Image 1: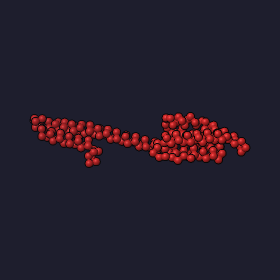
Image 2: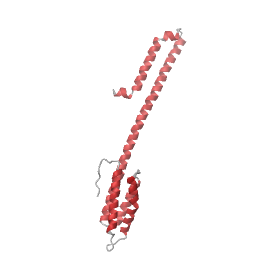
Image 3: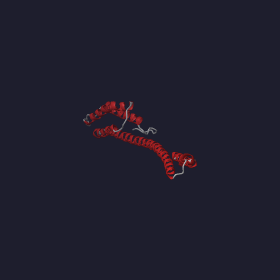
Image 4: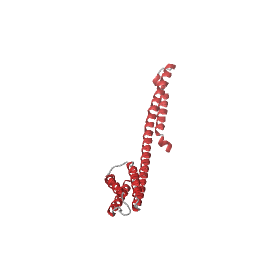
Length: 192
């Protein structure tokens, strides 16, 4: 049954071809009229040409049908691959943001800044638009500036608590918005 479904055009043109040849053989006396060999050869050539034309047209239709199905399948596979790639990029971004938050907690602002800058490079590779991306874009610079302030602190002059709170709040906000645009959205990610 599957064979008939996938090659129905070929079955149809075979049946039509057999019917044409059968009809041509039955009606040969009426059409040709005189039994000379040239007329017979011409008649057979015409019938074969008509059958070949039907086969050619049917094969073109068959090819078009399969080209469309192959194209649709390729597009679906490409879309799935892009979703996996996007989910992977989002996952890397989330991990990098968690690492950044850990360095902020231990007041290692140089490594926090390095991780955050790596996050920004990864984030730039995620395609998309929308409110979530706008929200992230709006706080990227502010967060990096706040982390940079920490680089110039010392044991006696630590980063203000309000600035650390802003950093953590912004990192959590970025992670929340990233999770919303994740192509693998059926899953919840744990945020630190």
